[in-house]
Image (cartoon, rainbow, N blue to C red; front, side):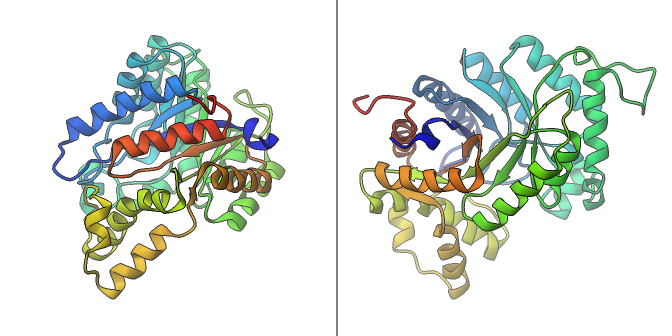
Length: 339
């Protein structure tokens, strides 16, 4: 086994994607079940995401779901990838993570992003606008200040039980997120494994500009992306089809749908524009047999010098998804080849 991937932490972000004919509760329970299974396979951390008003995604309240995941597991780190800070008051976010850390000490991660609601309607319902993402650095500074007791916006107020706790923060890089992470001295989560040259440039700037902080004394880079592993390259490619079609449908219909079986997608009549988006959604992801994926991950880790890989794969067949994660665990040396 090559050395770089064996020395790199391997983690998972799950978005609680619904399948055709499935309700949100089933998707959320499946997320909790997946976390338990991945803990058994030796994955380092398990994160959940925040999406609002998306028909195909049940994960709308990540700190609530993280609590359920942490309660159902015992060793794997649990967190968010991420809480979209512009959607919330920093004090409320601090309180939520303070509660999580108090209930599950030493296992909680605070992944933070700068996106706001995807549509105008969602943003209005959240009471937010696109401009709320403009001061992400200030929002982040206030949030961290609630933990350290150094926030200046409300000097007479203290966030309980957050103040005095140290919940590791991570910045999800979009746009200038890498620069924000470097200036704040925080770990960086950046994707994806497809945009290699752009990612490498952003990571190099992050490392060059990193300022040590009370949260992190050295740069730490998590590279995120889709990875699908199966017995054959063709089977691995089929795992990518449901998410690629959902992307194509959303780009042409304005609605992100539940995942469909790959058999139906393969025989579907698509418009030229849908086919273009679908082909784009299939390209560039790491997929194949265990040997092929090992080689591809080795290259990605070597090029980015990543400390960790965060996998975000979605597919219709949950048994096939778990099999992919089990194979990936063997690739990374988390489990033996005969397990």
